[in-house]
Length: 172
Image (cartoon, rainbow, N blue to C red):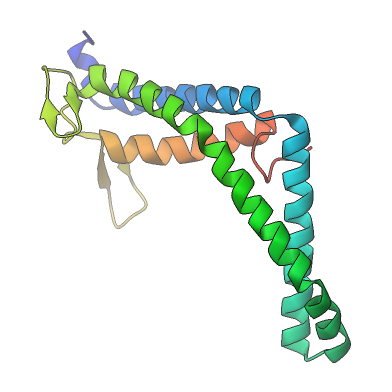
């Protein structure tokens, strides 16, 4: 299916990086389509309010400011309700997880020939060979396909969600 040279460094490193960026892009695009702009703005507003309250609460405890402490204690019930709403909305955003898993399996299966622990066919990546190195961890730390994919996916997911304005921390 895939050429053997793709399983050698540096081709494998770049290929898995590009693949993880593509998967992050697709997942973000699906999230963007399934989440309304109003929902996202509401979540960000709640998150800002919770962050401001937490900052005030920590400041009041740190400085011993009784007036500020009384103020934040009066708001605590509302903040707890907002935290519950944020948690509820976050769980609702998991509706894209099955779609992501299907995409992941459709990509992972041809790469490794494996589904979980079962080897279904021969593929360029067995899952144990080194596809990348992290040079700043006590020399060169070898990474297999899964480790490299996870690192690239997290980094790409954060960047792409910020660009598309899907994440809670994304700029408006």
